[in-house]
Each structure stands twice: as structure tokens, then as C-alpha cells.
Image 1 (spheres, one colour):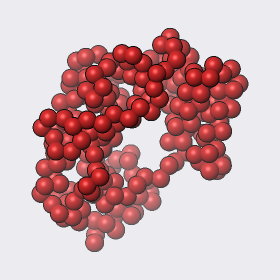
Image 2 (image 1 turned 135 degrees about the vertical axis):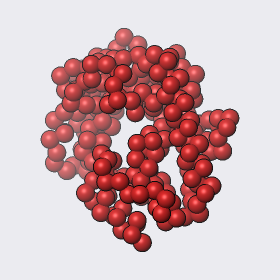
Image 3 (image 1 turned 180 degrees about the horizontal axis):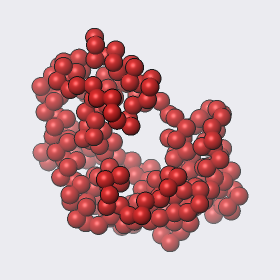
Image 4 (image 1 turned 120 degrees about the vertical axis):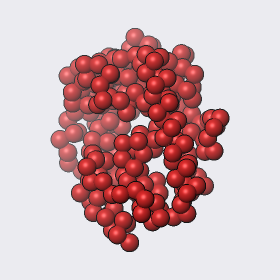
Length: 242
């Protein structure tokens, strides 16, 4: 069912773990997600922060770099999210300054892990000698990373830690503040077990069915997930009814 080019990723495993039908729609039927304004906010804030750190930009310059990137990603469309990217990017910079200039940004990780048939791929945000910091643009910083709302982000860091051999941290930033949390080892180990099991389950399903239509007969379409938009769910209904 899966294409030869498919590789496991944290986003794929998280989606399969949280919503198998949303996973099937994305990776089985191979329907790529459109970039929305919230996604554009996160990407633009990261790019603005990277420019600020590597080019030693002023706060005003960081704001401009982030807004310019938002306009580029979101093709100049109007959105309230545009007003958030500048201050969010600056708060990312404030949270990252203690680590110095990053050695990598959007570094590609690719590894074959024992027990899996497919390779695992990942792209890390900000890399340092012994640490990876993953940035999350949000409108409300969590008070900790131990709740279920942050579980997917922590599981993502478990994958990055196993692929890179480095420690990981999560940096949340809003237009007003930031919060940095280093991910403890026990959460890395716990998250990796969950993700590895998800990878194995994906491979088992792929071995069981030839087409995504066959998989849709096994996996019911579940509308109760944040992964769906009105448009994507309507298209998914057509896939499941075919």
C-alpha cells in the first residue's frame, strides 16, 4: 500500500497513534496537507528566529524577516496570524540565546533502526553540540510538558533523540513570552517505545493490505480528530465510500 519512497517519521507515527483514519488518508491515499495560516505562523517564526540568531539581527529586523517569510509561505493572503509571527520569532531568539549560535537548522536525520523495514526520517529545528531544540509557535505556553496535550511533541523528541544521540528540549513561544523545557530521559524512553510500536503497526498494516481502499475496510473513518478540516474530511468520506 505504501509507496517505495515512504519513510517513517515522528509525524506519521503520531498521526497513526492518535487517528489511524487521518493517517490512512495522508499516507495511504497520499493526500498531502495544504499549508494553513497556523502552519505558516510556525514556519515563519522559526525562519525569522534562525535569521536573528545567525545574522545577529535586531528585534525589528527579526520581526521583518518573520513577516516576509509568512507572506512568502502563505502567498500574501490575509490572516490575523501574520501579526503574531514577528514577536513569536523574537521570543524564540530570546529562548535560544543561552545556547549561542545554532550549528544546524532543519538538519536532516535518516536512520535504519533494527526491527523496522523502513528507514526513519526527521528534520530537527535548532541543533547544538549535544542538544536539539524543537520550537513550537503557540498562543499559550504550557506550564509543563507532562500533560496529554504535550504528549505528541514529547514523542517527537523521543524519535529525534534516538536518531541523533543528543538530548532534546522543547521551546514554546507566544507573541508575549516563551517557555523552555528539557525533555527528561524517562519521557524519551517512554515515548520511543510508543513510537516504535506505532512504526511496527504501520508496517504490519502495509503487509496486510495492497491498496488504501482495502485498509479503509479495516480502519473506520473517525471524524473526531483535530487533523481534519471540513474540506479534507469531506474528501475522506469519498475515499471511504468508494
